[in-house]
Image 1 (cartoon, rainbow, N blue to C red):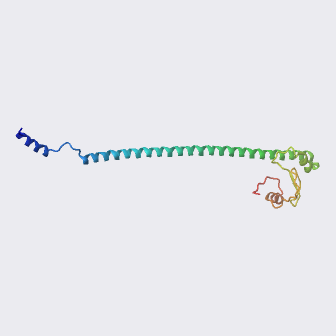
Image 2: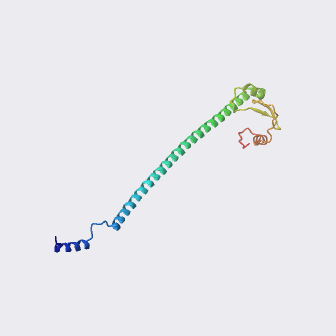
Image 3: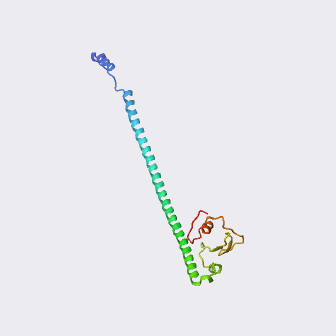
Length: 171
């Protein structure tokens, strides 16, 4: 069989026309764009997860701080109430002393009063009798040691001022 004249033309055209080969440069640029998009998406998801965790931790810390502040407020209110009760008890004891002294006058015996009422006094109220040098002569609280209060501001204030008023000192 003899080749047709068109077969030579056909061979030339086939050699001159590019076959359907993949274009690696265009395909690589497209896949890098997809890869960059996936990396950006993953980084965004990781960033959102970390931000979510950060805000949850901050919210939890704020709620714990608020709870602790509320507990401290309750403790401060309790302490304030306790101190007011102690001062009120001391005021009641002083009023009873004043009434008994006015009733009995010069016959009033403070040492006997303190020993008789020592058991009924509140645990924070102590009646003590000191002499002019600051030595403890009698108290509702028993002590085996001799005590001297001359170095305390409260004793010096009452000794020097010679007035019956409340005095609060650091000691």
